[in-house]
Length: 125
Image (tube, rainbow, N blue to C red):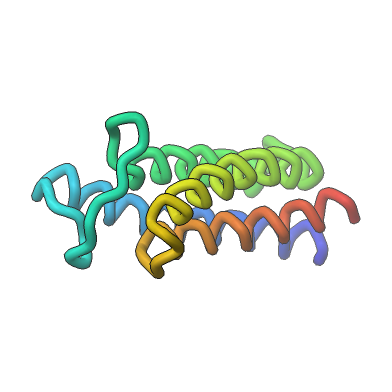
């Protein structure tokens, strides 16, 4: 994958994560219930979607910096590999706590895994 394609992928994938986790977070914040009539996962007293949103937002900011040329594709892939690995560990822990049920946390986990593998592959190429 060339640098331009990778940078576009990173912006779109992280934006999708921000929109997804942002929707979940906004639903929880404003209605005090979790989206899609699921039980809400918590981590250290906070809804897991809030933490997922923060991680995706950091990834999106780094991706936009890459798209603006403020960060090289190599540094972008390194940053996204690191941040997405935190997301994989975090959401993987939540999915494990939910006994591997297919929930919105599972979808977040899959987003993080996709971004991690694409970024790690770009980092090593």
